[in-house]
Length: 456
Image 1 (cartoon, one colour):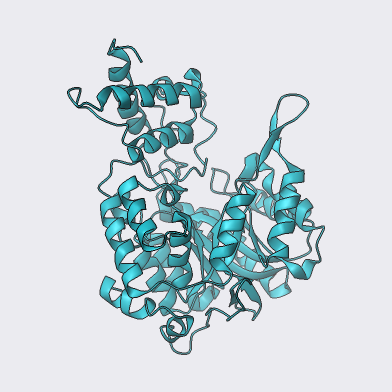
Image 2 (image 1 turned 135 degrees about the vertical axis):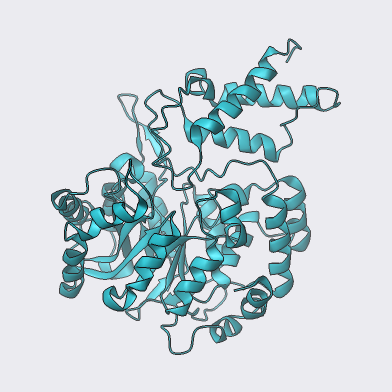
């Protein structure tokens, strides 16, 4: 779908116009009109109302226990879940590997305090890290039921398909994870038995894998598919990382087949809520009372095939803001979409590292806080604290801001210069970032600033 076609189809400014853009005869996930102040819902393949805002449970709030260990704060999680359900959120997304393996358990405790009919739970078969045996997969599957305290799963995903493993290609990994071991056949039978209500997959990486799985839709009848989508990735995912696939293509292929779409990374790992100032000023001028994040969520919600857009809301203020965006959704207009396209074009010209803070690369065996290093660097780029021009009147200010904030936010033992280039992290990165190379680049830049003997 070309940009002008997208604007024509989805930018009319009303939910009705979005509905008209759906594929004729396909399952419709169009928005259910609601009164002001109440959540917008889409219809699931089973005909249930699904909140257009979904709760991503990867980044629950943490606290420090009596032994000084950082753990998920169950009390805060309970409060967030209670508030979300009270205000219309029905979709909660977790995985066995989230929250250092604790997300399913903590999420299950919080949700089990509510009637089972008041929420839907999505979790995943996260067997992408080396052990592709049937025994391991089935043990993980059954453990999810126990941790989530449920006797059926509303949404179950083959997690993070499209990646490689060691010397195996992405197609070989797919074959070994789900086909050769009979795991997909097992999951199809579980769906028939009702223990899985909807079966789908989440995609990162090789388009060949995505295309193959969709080519098998008549056989497997995917109930939904989860993709990374936002107004930058719509046209420029491949620009940010050569191994990523533009969301325009992914969404378009799913829309052709009438497959509901679940959105991950609507904020591009939080970066679209912290845009460079010149970009932020344009959005603030258009809508002074709107947050930057609300623009990104409205972009996703304007798409009629989207079932829900996931947000990892660690803090209540994020939850409150996102609830206001979807309660109810105000679809984007043609001029809104044109403005976001312009901002996306400008964004890809910034030297940012496309890290989404998913933490799949962690823990680093050498103690480096990989997402923390990238987050600091990107923040400094956004705020104008990256410069090589020592003659610039802003150089001393930028140098001081960069080095002081680096040491304040990251322990020196966790900074880039400790990277030895082992590349263990690269295979785990769904954004396909060349992490060792980026670490060397950041280390070199930081060292150049430190060698400057000017006082901070």
